[in-house]
Image 1 (cartoon, rainbow, N blue to C red):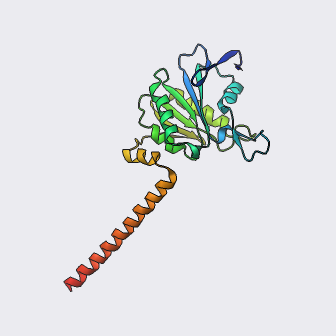
Image 2 (cartoon, one colour):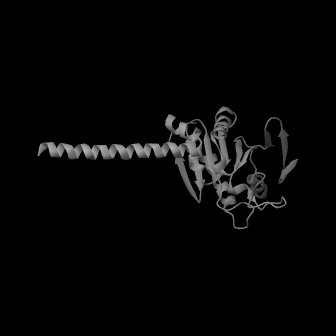
Image 3 (spheres, rainbow, N blue to C red):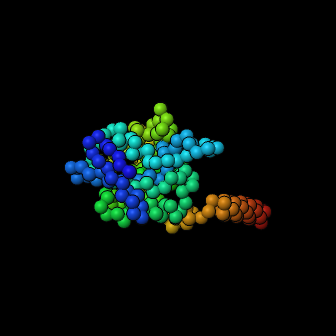
Length: 224
């Protein structure tokens, strides 16, 4: 499959993963990674389908429309709603971002609901500029914010110092958090089990408060 960006030719290369490569005179290569989310959603074309489906990376169409002139690689990694990204997905994304030394600039398209959680997970990566963005309306819709957000994300990726950034609605948030071992454990725990654990901790805390109040009351009575 071929893609034409203005006079530039993109070739699709398929091995274990799918990459698109765009060659140009620019020396600053950017890796674009698709994880899914609203930005890639479109009205279903399959019979009897309900709701939106997630298709090819929206950034392919956006970059083509903009006739960009820069060197980039494109990696469609996941086609998932952000709520469906699990710990294994985050680990795979982290590995790609951290281990591929040829890329110092990375733009990730992501669902907006959990984009901050993913950014925090990636915040352990210190030697690259990684920008996460998405949109609140699918790129396929007329009044989508996708083009603006992606364009701003590319600008941040090119100009900002190393770090993890979230770009949405004209805002640039730099993520300085480094997830603790407890955070990583919570990310790897299934949601239903995590809710049960949280309820147990809440119950324990309530019990401790009651015991502390009871102890204070007994101490007051003894003093009297």
